[in-house]
Image (cartoon, rainbow, N blue to C red; front, side, top):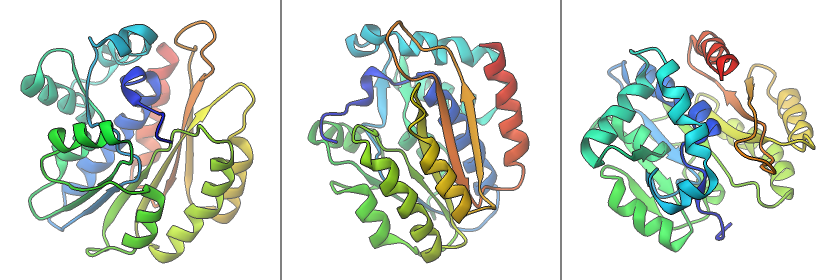
Length: 256
């Protein structure tokens, strides 16, 4: 949706969940000396300022990465991304998922980022240095680019879910993408809201892709009236060790 801007939500606990898993997976995948394909369907602007008015208005970063980072293991790859981003862009800089990917991807890897919002796309073009940018519908782009060359790779699908029909659309889309690209790692992030509107989508995906992993964490809403009370990641073909890493994140979120 062209109305969604992630600056109000950057660094929230859903980002911590999503970006910690993404950083761990990318470190694992890039440890092997083989080219990697990376795709994001809803990239956002890539780089955020947690001191900006948008972040201060919602308080989500203060309830999120500010609290969670000290609890992460010192050698966690997510901490390395955070430190590198601050060293380059300043103490209040926060990396969106394109910069998480940018940190790990190597010159021989390929990176494709889709973002439709004009202002977000313009900012992304300044933040990401190694990607091919697409001002296009990310889900249509996924259909067009998959299966990729090289076939080894990861796709992150991270919609805003501003339209309720997205849940049903994604329940149909993810198995289609897997059928085209059966070796690819496909990550679908979803919010957990009080009405649990994600449940039918997750049940449908689990039925279609029984070997996939669905990992969910619960947390207290960032402020009164804020609906999101948890974060989910549906992971197709996750790298070896993902279940153990997810369990470590369970321990982190239990302390928050």
